[in-house]
Every structure is written in C-alpha cells, then in structure tokens.
Amino acid sequence: MAEAYSTIKRNGESLFKDRASKFIGIARKVSTEEEIKEALDEIKDAYPDAGHHCYGLRLYHDHSLYRYSDDGEPSNSAGAPIFGQIQSFDLTNVLIVVVRYFGGTKLGVGGLINAYREAAKLAIEDAGIVTSYLKDYYSISYAYDQTSDFKQIVHQMNGDVYDETFESICKATVAVLPEDKEDFVALLEQKQIDFTYLYKR
Image (cartoon, rainbow, N blue to C red; front, side):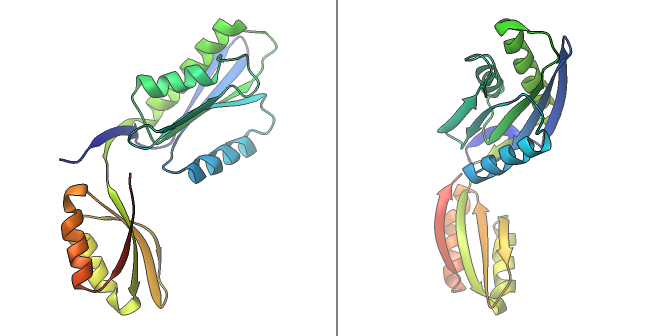
C-alpha cells in the first residue's frame, strides 16, 4: 500500500480585513525548492506595493523541509501562525503567503497573529485538500522511434509523465507507485529504454 500524505488540491486565495488592514492569503502547491522560489518571486512581483510578504512552507512527504518568515513584522507574529495552519491541516508540498497592506491602525501582536492565521486558514480552505501518494521518480531517455513503447509502458504502469521533450533523443520524468517500480524497471529494460532513478517524493 502506497504511503499517503495530504496537500492542497489547487492554488487558493483569500482576503481577511481587520481595521482597514488587508491580508491577502495565497496558497500554492509546490514540490521543489525551485518552485517555491519562483512562486515567492511571482507573488512579490504581483503585490510590489504591499508592506509585508509573510509566508510558511513545508515540503516532502516526511516534512523534512520547512520554513517561515515574518518579513519585517514583529517576531513570530506572522510566519509562525501561517506555518501553524499548515501543521494544523497536516499539509506538505505547500507554500502559504500572506500579503499585508497596512490600513493605518496598529493591530498589536495578538491582532497580527489572528489576522495572519485567519488569512492562511481561508486560503487553505479555498484551495481544498487532497490525499496524494508517495511515488518513485525516474529520468527516462529514449530514441524517437521508441515513443510508442515508452507510452505503452507508462500507460500500463499508470505512471505520471513530466517535462517531456521530443527530439532525436526524447527525455521525460516519470513517477510510479512504489509497488509498481520493479515491473516498471523490468519493462524499460526489456524495451532497452534508458532510465535513472531520481528520488522518492
């Protein structure tokens, strides 16, 4: 039985207001540190005039990578409550950013904690939660005339294909459930398709 974990179903957004301050919650599904950096840069570019871009994130099925940032707010008043919602919903492979526009009235640390927590919670609820399963990822290389063999193997193993390129030597990343990895490898070897094991995620 494949190991299961919870993540968000899709990207989500929310808006929470307190005494004229606006807190925009943004939930993003991510699977690598590169995707996290790209999402943070994109969100900062989308809201360049905001006072703060605070966030919490957790990555990988074993929760081995996690971070949070107050981005200039008082210590532990923003990043920690955002990350607390990720923990509360037991999510991984997720980035939650809360963008703040100051409304002219100070909320105090307690008010900030509540606002960042609520904006994060509402963004997660908007995104929805789904159960995903741990998979083994492989880098695949094959000649163009092996395309039908490759497609047949992937279909037979119910694999997920990412980053396909079609040239004289075609390349792709394929994910299969751990219980199917031996059959998957055997079929690749049978058809003389090159592969390299990448990671479990």
